Image 1: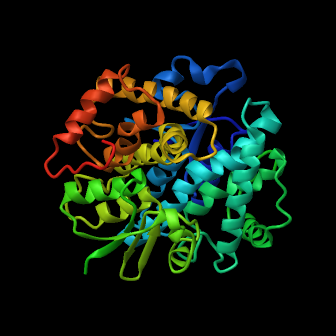
Image 2: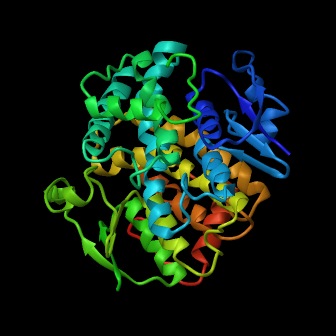
Length: 199
Length: 199
């Protein structure tokens, strides 16, 4: 049975899941959610995810909110451990970047884009400060590594890429971060890569 | 060999790891870091964690930043899957709450405490708004569940508990969230539970 992804095309969090599914060859049934009509705040979606957010994954009895959790679930179903290792050190190493995606990426470039593109009432200056610090740290990391974790593409890259690549939509320039630029090119060159609107 | 935890007693993020280690019977060598002297921003610590934060775990060749990643690493080394299951659905279910800990808990009650207790220049009103929304969602969840995930204590509880329990230090009252109150009592009653200053 194909898992259902409650999806919004312009959501970078939904795109994390679509991107990983495309790269890993996982079929998903996409169910569009009309965020502008508030469909995510009403039944039946609010019952599936009381947080009132997309994406939501429904796979038989399994219902998951949070894009990072969905990546972990889908990757750990794969026999191939390439995208998510099972050994403690590998799992912990990838996990570091899932926390970064959930916090610093979301509240930095992610929040800046919510203000500029969707008119959210958030502190744009604060988001820009967080984005600058974050992008500097990621760029320094990628000066020494081709991928965020373990020397190969993992779900860490899928979780961090979307809102970093979309940063210009939030008024965050990426020109000063050449290593991030080359990493994004490597991601775009992966077999199966799919873009999203704005990339 | 005992893993080393670079630690600060008043950090809720460090406490997540100390709490889990105590509950799971894992020995850690605690290495105090003098945050007030900026030791986390200097060599050798900045080399171990370029993000300039504690906790940092060093276990032989393994070096991990981020409290959630450290919890995942330590729990997945255990033969007992009680604290962190290996099956995809269980792993994804716990993972949802690790993202919540990294983002909403950190930027809600965590940030409010940084302002009130440590004088950080952050938006206290914003932190209070985030805390109110978060605590409402957690309380509603705990009205139907004894534990955050899987009907038993997991690292999800260890990741979320510290900054929720410390919320009053940030000016966030917990009286309106009775289910959170009873969940905190259940955590405090777990064999091996250790407190931290402020609890």
